Image (cartoon, rainbow, N blue to C red; front, side, top):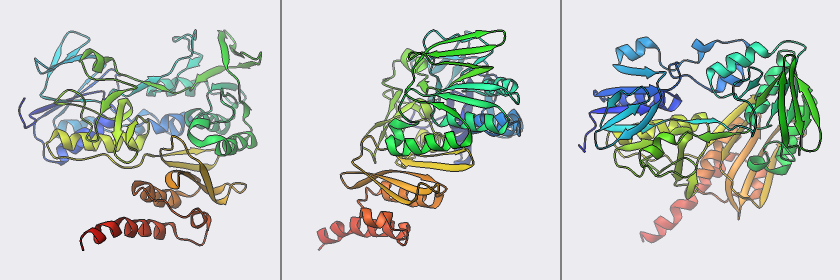
Length: 423
């Protein structure tokens, strides 16, 4: 394999793929670039699917990431509507489902993730929507009629955004969540209870601690029954219970897979010349010191850029703390970091007034933060998390303390050992 990339094939015409293609061209790469996608659509943004596009304020073109004109001007070929089967590393080519091949000497897996399915739930029923792609969002939008009733299984951020959008369209949402509170695994009980209060106050019929037993459809709607005997009727149902990484191509290509495609801090897989990024990548994160796979817009962007730079032989590391946001029920919610476990929660501001930041500490070290209407706090927390800072909890909670100042102090503390060692 040559040390210099001459042609790059990206499997998955996704957000990650679009960012990688743009980065390659901006960094002066003049070789071939081919994006292979199983959807018929050119790369598009997914965050609007549960918000602007579902509201009817946008169409599919508004979410486009790469226009046909840009692809022509930058010699980027799109091979859409034909899934990839595997990468033949010996031949230096990607095998497609239609029997054709796409040659290359560097490959990027950006295959993303698919919506997790409930057992025994039909995949082809028009009234059951697994919201993951553009066509899913357009179909769901056609089902949202004022005065109607929408059942949503899962109170994560996607399910909550759909509930918020449904309310704005005059549809009554009923949300069924298996955990005791929404987002329990990520946010914990206290912040999950805050999310539940927000939903109920907005008019959502929220049922927690309920496991779906069956989903039945008929000519007039759907009926969802839980194991406790709860029976909920609606015009349609959205299943929003997470996603599963699309690893079939990686497995068929002999690439190491475990909860996604395993990659190092440079987005390199176990096979030389093959990279992975975005929702499908289980990334060895240098800040957290463990494998982490997340399904966030910002992560897809950052990893797409890092993968492209490394494809070009320019070493780059993805070490930013994970960050994502959600707009729902008139609130901007943001989360940064990755707290697998925490032993202390420090709140700055007022939860009752929906204007606060919650900091998650593990043995004194700041690992994550969750905020309502406080984007500035989140960006400061991001800096602290990246530095492995252990800020004074009292100062974190004190509104008079500038969080940016705490980040500066963390820098000074980190520099002291180096200065002492140089004497």
